[in-house]
Length: 596
Image (cartoon, rainbow, N blue to C red):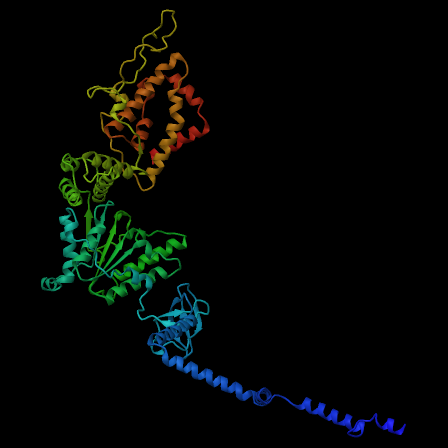
């Protein structure tokens, strides 16, 4: 039994000891790790900041190498980026102001076109040496801070008026106007080119001239030719540009205009449409009208003030010289007044030759026939006729201009010229509307005689002849008839439009009354009115090429003795009783207007 029990034990010793050995082996396996991988992890875990620093150094070295390898163009791009950043700080768009006072290196007082003054900051990148009272500065569009200084302190509006390039027109491009060219040469061109001639003569050259005449006669064209012939600085301004929104801006612009002209002397200041600011002064309650008058007063001071203007000549142009203030065009300010009339036959011929010199004309074109027409065509109208004739030829795919093109072009130009003219109403009246010979007079009005009314076979009045024989009315019964030409008096401004409205209302209200007389026995009254209308309105319109003059017609109808002409008194009184209040008002207003 003892041997059997001992045989169950392991041969190498105690089983407890064996268990302890197995446990120790397991513990040794857990502590074992791969030497390479675990060593790297331990090294990273022990020095993390050192590794990050190494990476940053490598990145810095890489960037430096890239900068050294970049071409020169990339550096220019960097400079451009820097400049764009500065522009962003300045802001865009920028306002323009005037520096009034510098407080310190960082602050100043400026004024703007809107009127008030501002206490603003001066940005650090602004050149302080350029900041002087009165100079033009650039302002930030939001904070109004000074972000720059304008090199040229002239008003931007005046800078636009100065022509950098002389006009291409010359004296050779002007048809006729020999007298006007000679006068403007003596007044403007010669004092600038040869001032010693006036000194030897012992006289002072003219300070300025004014060109006046109807539109399209060459006033602006002659001013361009003067600018082309002289090397002087040419400043062109329209009178309406001197009218500004805020009080004081108009006179300020006039002062700035003449200051720039003096700085760039010798110079010529051309003010077109001077009647926009130079009209006669009058008492006005409107602030806008008073501001225009203050602008004109500043212009008067600049033309003839205490300060001499030197070699600065002034040319003005207008087509309404009668509306200008006498102080503006007196000698000493404007020494010469040059009139530009409508072209005569010789001038027309020259202008037609100028504008048709480069055109391909057909053989049937006779320029002399166009020249001899009695139309009041200006130089601009003649140019429009030639241009329109060329366009009509192009419309039909022709390269040669025919006589028919010139005829159609002339009719179009005349129609557009007369369209909207307030001097009268224009009817399309031609001799083809009336089938009469040249020797025949218009249908005479029929007047009733003292004889018995003509009757038909049944004893009733003849519906065709009414009151019987109607002999022709005497010329004395028709005041200012077409056989005695009547020239209407000149209308003051604005009255021609009123006259046209009155005549239109007169025709609308009274023609139906007098034309449509009811009853067969009064048919002659309608004939009398129709004949009078022919004699006083239609026939003069035919003779005047379709021009219907309301003032002349008003005067004629006002003084017509209808009883002497042949209109029966009963018919007139009957119709007067039927007049409406508006028709009576029209007649009363016509009486009042003609009396005035």
